Image (cartoon, rainbow, N blue to C red; front, top):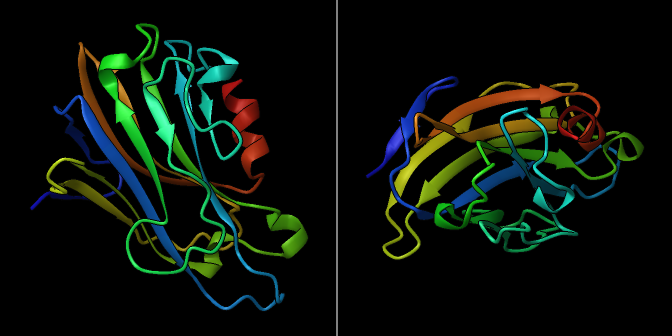
Amino acid sequence: MGINLEKGQRVSVTLPKFVVGLGWDTNSSSTGDDFDLDVSVFILGENKKLVSDGHFVFYNNLKSADGSVEHTGDNRTGEGDGDDESIKIDLSKADPRVTEMCFVVTIHEAENRRQNFGQVRNSFVRIYNPDTNEKILEYELEEDFSIETAVEFGRLYKKNGEWKFEAVGVGQKGGLADYLNKYN
């Protein structure tokens, strides 16, 4: 059945292996350009910075240096139902320095294409068991991000040895570059 989260809500994640699925639909672009949304995962240490360059997972680096995070590939259209991009997580492989994983969705070339998250709808992040397809949790983003070109959908973090997921739903205007500056 799973838990439907509200913004800011946190829930324990007890499975060591699971999939984070992210999805969205786009409005027809008034600019005539297709939308290309991309998921990135920033794998951070205690200092809230990337553990290493190999701990930034995105469409050009599909697997983390420790093997705990694997991006299943770039979906350039977002067409169809269900997850548009998926991230496989295996917490048993996580580098011991890892304390947090942030899931960010950005619009590729948003500024050039004059696109923002105000033109994106039905956005969600969910965690499910890949063996049973049972949904563990889901968070639907309901905010109107009219100027933002990047949104942190959620984050996994370790507190007192236990992994938890937080529904974040916070946008930024600067796109992926702002997140790289923040976490690098």
